[in-house]
Amino acid sequence: MAKPRICNPSRPSPNTTMRVAATMASLNPSMRIAEQLADFRGEVWPGGRRDYLLRHLDRVDVISQHLPAVAKYIRMVADRGIESHLVFKNPVPMEFALKHMAERVSVGIFDRLATI
Image (tube, rainbow, N blue to C red; front, side):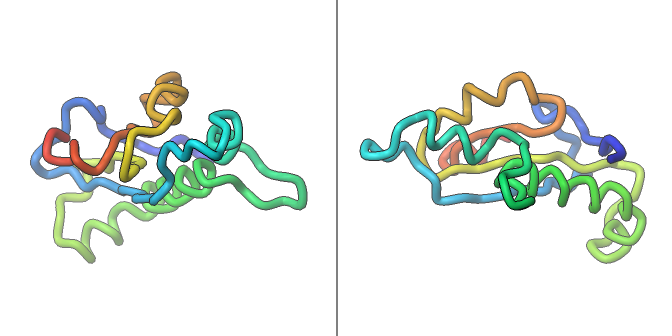
């Protein structure tokens, strides 16, 4: 799989397009942290189904591979790149567990979208 060209999530350009995956996952007291993290490992589950993180990254890859067409459709400059963000309603363990993937995806919560 080709690596997507993704801008630095900490310094977006005003002409950058972001691929945001918003999810309602939240820190659920009845759900163990390990169970929540299992859905966002970037792996293929038994039976061939991809977890939520891998599906998001696959979509970023597809957008990156077709960036000129996407740029034309949304009327942006094609060489600006895209950013990959996972946005949650509430603080979640994935915010901290995915720091090692900061080059490919930025994780945050909805209330902090204005700071991106």
